Structure formats: structure tokens, C-alpha cells
Length: 318
Image 1: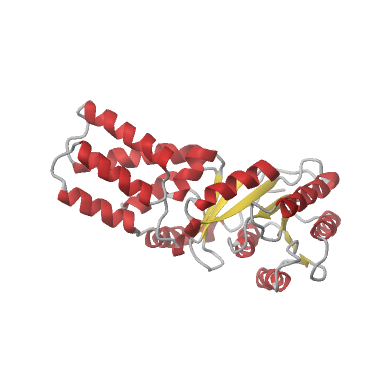
Image 2: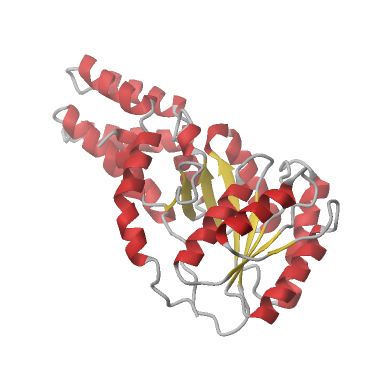
């Protein structure tokens, strides 16, 4: 069902543009500060590595991941493998890519014989879930797939209307009920409709909720149970949308959502509005969850597959 290559040419044409946008989005303090740091230090010594350590921590890379990176740099220094700042930068690049590569797994929809591929979207308030859904819908349509949206966020003001706007923009159907309706019931109806109409992909929105709100987390569990009763292995993907601007606070969110509902992939949103990009390393190093997509803008095409080397090169400035 999902073997179509429609949209490949369009994707190829926009690849360079997206790369440039990612580079612009990640022209952050880390790049400038590293350049300044290497300008000031002529000696490659422990003092330089200590300043790199501070710089990484303040860029939201996280203490544990930073310690790992700096320990590896120290080992290279001990072995006389760091002769100049160029060697330090390249070593830093290699170690950062090595941390991210195991979680760089873009979402690939497997062949399916029956029923839609079900994506359940979760996250805290304001993380960018609904916008991400709109971008995903456009992406799947470009691949030649039929898409349906389920307006499971029945509590936030205008949430249904916002999703319906994305549906109109992408020319995909949206299943919705009245404000305050039971979220599980809305998604149940959408899944029933998607199966009846032979839809390829169903994307289900849910209300934003704080990871500390046990009652709302239980509601998410109910939604998952309702979905799995109709299709035993669904939802096939549970995507957690994380706002990159929140920095290390996002780690607590991710851990709780994963514990409660079994997150299978991460979307890192709003990188274009963040002063730091290091949180990606914390998510990778501490959780090990696949990072599926990066959101680098509000446009419908501003969602790209996560690539470890590309991200690090953008972060380090080349």
C-alpha cells in the first residue's frame, strides 16, 4: 500500500532549501562561542576542554551527555590525537554524530494489507502538535497516500477549527465532534470511518496535557485501548512532539509520556525559535527514542527527516 514514490521529485527539489533553512535555524550561540573559544585558545589542553564542557552544558546538551563527549575528547588529548583546533572540532563533530546516529530513524510506513496506519500525536500544551499534524498530512499526500485526521483535542479552544483548517489546506477529511466530546469516542469514529473508506494513514490529535497531570495521562491510555480494540497493533506510531525551546524541561516530559503511553518516536519542533539545539542530544543519550522529524518553521514544508550528521554540521556551523 505504501510503495508509491509520488512526491520524490518535489522532495528532491526542496532538499537544498530545507538544508539551508536548518542551517539558518541552528546558527546559534554554540557556533559563535566555539569559534570564539578556538580563537582565544592556542594550546589544546584541559582548560580548553573545560570551556567546551561549560559551553555544551549551557547549550542544553545535558550533563551526562556532555560528560561523555568531554571524556572522549580527553582520551584523544591523552593520546596526542588533538594537534590543533581543527582536530578538536572534527573530534567533537565525530563524537556528537556518534551519539545521535543510533536514534536517527525517519518514519517509514511499512506495507500494510488492511486498515490504516495509525499515528497518535501526544505532547504538552503549546508543543506544536496540531501544526505538526498538518505538515505530516501534506507529507503523506505528497507520497501519494490517502490521509484522514481525527480531532481528538476536544478541550482546547478552537483546536477542532485549527485542525479543520489544516484538513482544508491539505484537502484531507477531518473527523470531529463538538467541543468537550470524549476524545476516545472521536478517534474511535475516525478509525471506523478510515477503515470503511480505505484510508492509508489516520493521524489522531489529542489534547495537550502536562506530563504531571495523572488524570489526563489516564485519558491517553484510554485512547490507546480504544484504538487497539479495532486494530490490534495500533496505534502503529505514537509521536511525542517536543518544543525545543523548553530545553532540559523537555526531558521530564519525554520520560513521563514514554512511561505512560509508550512513545515510539520524537518530533523536535520549533528549532527555528530556539536559542539552543542541545536538547536533541539529551533525548538521544538519555532516552534512546527514535527522533523522526525536526520542525524548523511554520510553513507546510518545514518538517524534515532527522539526519545526525546534517544536524551536527548545522549546529557546529559546517
